[in-house]
Amino acid sequence: MMRATVWMLPAVFAVYMPTCRTLAVRPTMPPGEARMAELWEAPSDLADRDLFYGPWGAEHAPDPHATYRLVRLKDRGTNPGVTASDPQGREWHVKQPPHSHQGAEGPIEVVLSRVLSAVGYHQPPVYFVPTFTLAGESGTHAAPGGRFRLHDKTLKNLGTWSWQENPFVGTSPYEGLLVILMMFDSSDLKNDNNTLYEVRTSNSGPDRWYVVRDLGTALGETGRLAPKCGDPDLFERQVFISGVKNGFVEFSYHGWHQELFARRITPRDVRWASDLLAGLTDRQWADAFRAGGYEPVMAARFIRRLHQKIADGQQIGEQSGVYHESRTPARHDVGRVAAQHAEG
Image 1: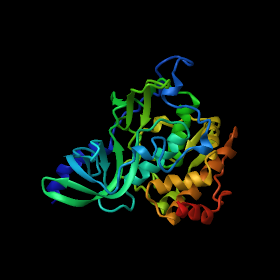
Image 2: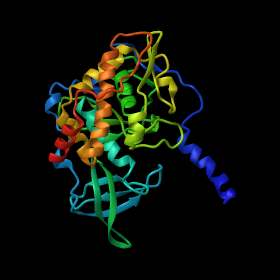
Image 3: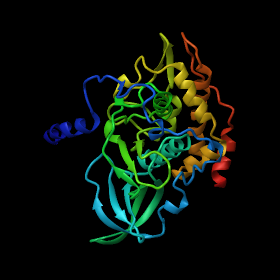
């Protein structure tokens, strides 16, 4: 057993150690030349956006009652999964929970995807299905569900893009995206999780999207080696902002790629992201967690802590010096949020 453990260590570290060297964070083009709409578009209708079905709507959602045909098993990553096709011929990439839905990445990914798309960041069509029927060579059986991501023909995967070097470094939407991920205690900030899409539609929008995918390592603690996610107890205890020093915000972040945050993000960046999230209604927050399959009481705990972080981010403004994070409940009542969540 000891020998097997030793042989497994390189594989474990290959998954959880993206790089050991510090990378420079810099834009790849002069300020003003970046096509901002490729990363973010201002949500003029924010309060009206649907956070249950998301930007792709109910028409793209998977049918939870259909029988799916196994195409292939997932062969990479730390969570099990399958690629399956539905009766309409649509192909779905399903991320399943390793053991149970408690702390599973799939529900978290759907929640965070809903929030990001609502505030203007591009996202592919993702949905949560708790269980589904899968047919394969061994027969037809009930399978654990999870995050269903649709392979949509209007989006062509062009590969990955770099957190450290891209056209948007230094802009409010780029820095604000990092702030939002810190609010959710996202740890998996690997370039492998970033996808550049060619957008093949007839509308007048951007022809490329810079997308952050695989967002499931969040809502818990941050860390470098298998941090716990989807844990409300941990999430409530995690410090968001530890201080402001020399004009830059210091986050209580313990994951990889510290260079993305060290002496880079200003109070103005934090205020920009916080004001953006503050535009979401109680109903929208509840719908985002309902989309991920969360029970109302647990969802309300996550939402309450997120509201506290948003309030702290707005309060920090242009402050400098010593910063004390709030631990008092925000204006949103947890019971009311839970009730709205349950109403569906």
